Length: 68
Image 1 (cartoon, rainbow, N blue to C red):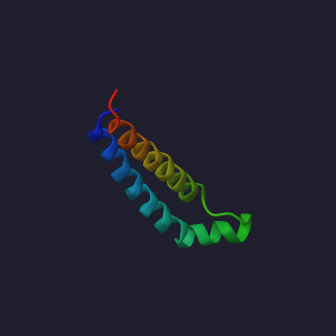
Image 2: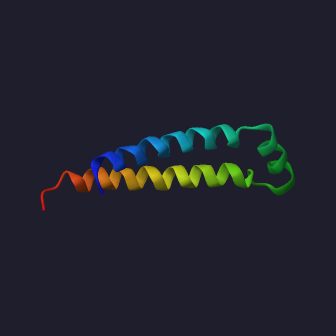
């Protein structure tokens, strides 16, 4: 994985985490939490995708620094 792709994954992951946090604190998520006990699926999916993308990007950056 090239370093540019890894950095793009990190930035994209952080953006997804931000929007996931916003969706988690939204009114629709609060309503879903009242009835189901858990936040909306959109909030959960954005946070999970953000974590996965950020970890993949960090792994790519760490591995691209090594010489083969």
